[in-house]
Amino acid sequence: MVAIQLFNEIRSIFRNTPTFALVLETLLLIAVIWLLLHRRGGGRRRRLTKEEEDSIIASYEPEPLVEDTDPNHPLLRTRIVQSRVGKRIKVDGHECLNLGSHNYLGFLEDQEILEDACKSLRKYGVGSCGPRGFYGTMDVHLDLEDRIAKFMDLEEAIVYSYGFSTVASAIPAYAKRGDIIYVDEAVNFAIQKGLDASRSTIVFFKHNDVEDLERLLLEQEKRNQKNPKKALKTRRFLVAEGIYMNTGEICPLPDLVALRQKYKLRLFVDESISFGTLGKGGRGVTEHFNVDRDEVDLISAGMEGSMGTIGGFCVGSHFIAEHQRLSGLGYIFSASLPPMLTQAAISALNRFEQNPEIFEQLQSKAKSLHQKFSNFSKLRLRGDALSPVKHLYLAEPAVNFEAELKLLTELADKCISQGVAIVQAAYLQNRERVPVRPSIRIAVNRLLDDADITSAFEVIEKVSQSLL
Image (tube, rainbow, N blue to C red; front, side, top):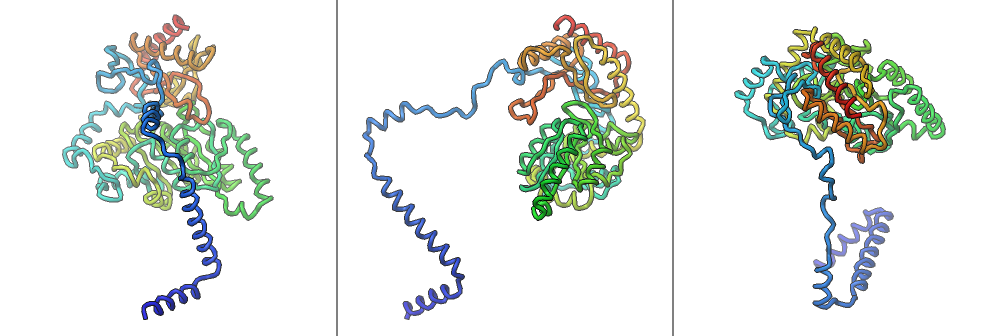
């Protein structure tokens, strides 16, 4: 009876299974049998003797986990900071004017923000040690997201615990394989990692060159006309920075918005430098150009610069924020931003709203420094006059990359010994999409006065003349 019942069940299975499924399963079964027989046949090898095995083991040299590194590599050189970071800083025993920290508004020295953070520390402790989706969300996180959305006059914001992971997670949360992303070739490393993670087709256009971008868009339009079905399924994105970290230049946002409308693009702008530095109210490049923020699909920013804390945020429509709560890997899998640093960001926003004159003060200092630093005899300045980030390059390029980097490193060391803290910009050259020329990155602080700027110029000019 059992055999008859089993036979009837098997016959019922074959009757209810489509023919193509049966054929596929049969082929898979044949393939498995063939592989098993092939492996069994291939295993008929001469067994090694004990002496041969010992000889192979003795001569085996495993590949190193990490390749040999030059001990003199500039990135391995450590400068020791022996004081609190602010307008003044003690580096390797030298009291210096600080032109290296991205403390644009001077909030790292703001006593009121520090006291607010300490109160939060006493209330919540150090951190949740858990991601936002589990037990890492506290009321200060929700307050910060609400405040950012209101400050930017957009529907919703989402806060990340690390600035780098913000844009690196936001891009692959929306762009997928088969999509096309048009990107300025000078974008920062975090954006580049987000592009890699998206697995989309990446098309780079020349830095701040709107004509080159439109040329690429027209070429894609011609391809779309040849294959309209594929074009309907292909989403197109445009990614830029408000102020480019690698050049200090402002993006031509009005022109990008015009192309976005013309070619139906989704526009993402990273405002890690421009947020809290551009515009009358510090709302970034959109306020600077008086562009409706609804024209930008996603605005992201790190909070390590103007806000004097860590972490980052994305702000936009309700969909933009809510989608990342399920798809932004840096949000899902990272422990939430420590409450005391979250409170520091809220306190920074309070200062933004209560003292909007700080943005004009920063922009004035940036223009003053730009005007003064444009007069170096051996160095060339790059960056927008309003940008708090600027770059100094050798006026006469060295024979190669290594020689130029060595000269700039020596320049920075000698300036530190004479009381001006500057640093060479650090890049992972073998990972950057476009090779980046070595430079000294200058960060402007709102607390600088004219005497500080003049003194820094004189020290750098004197050192560069003696060295170059």
